[in-house]
Structure formats: structure tokens, C-alpha cells
Length: 151
Image 1 (tube, rainbow, N blue to C red):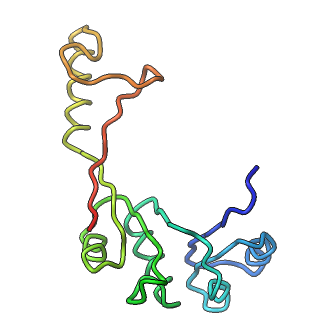
Image 2 (cartoon, rainbow, N blue to C red; image 1 turned 90 degrees about the horizontal axis):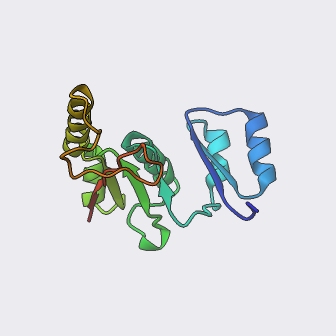
């Protein structure tokens, strides 16, 4: 089922055994602070796009990629990279054309939803009474849409 999919790990440091396991997979890449192990990256970028759990991880991975000439000035060596948070550093990289974009949570909307539901519950009302919010298909989650920052 899951074949021919790159496995990319960004780690502050790694071990030889982990490098062997990832290398055996054939499409495994380790990006690490260890120069010997990060050498596995050279010439083996197999991903069409990358996503990180937060902007700090995205920035760190991009800095590691740049050591090998990616996401610099050669557009043929550009990999779209998306982060999450909206940090000033990530926005700077987006403005420079180094990073593709970020998704940021709408904290105001989330806070308003939590506050409205809590007021309803404390008042003995149905959770979504007199709000514009709706539960998703689970019946227990209110989803809010993230905003984006792209160039």
C-alpha cells in the first residue's frame, strides 16, 4: 500500500543504525546536524513538496536543504515548503521566495468559539445556541479555517 513514498526525517542528531534503516528503505532521507549522516541528502531529494508541523521546523529544514543548493537561487532546485504558525522568520523566507507559504490559526475565531460554547454550557443552553458555529461530522468538533501567508 505505502510504496515508493519518500521518508524524510529532520533530526538534530541521528545514529548510524538509524541511517542504515532509512538507507535500506531506498527513498529515505535524514537531514541532521551530523555532517556524515546528512551526506545521505546529497543528490537524493525525492519529495515534490514538504510540510512542517511548525515554522521553526520548516526554517531548520530549509536551512539544511540550502547547504545542498536547494531553495536558493536556482529555481530548478526549488522544493515547495509549507510551515505552520506565521513566525516573522518564515514570513521573511516567503517574501524572499525561499519558502512557499504558511498556514496560521485564526486565534480570535477559536477563542470566540470556545467562549461562546462555554457561556452556553454554563447557562444550561445547547452548546451552539445563538452562534454561527457548527459541529463537524463527529458531532463534537467545531472546525475553524486557518489563514494563509503566501507570496
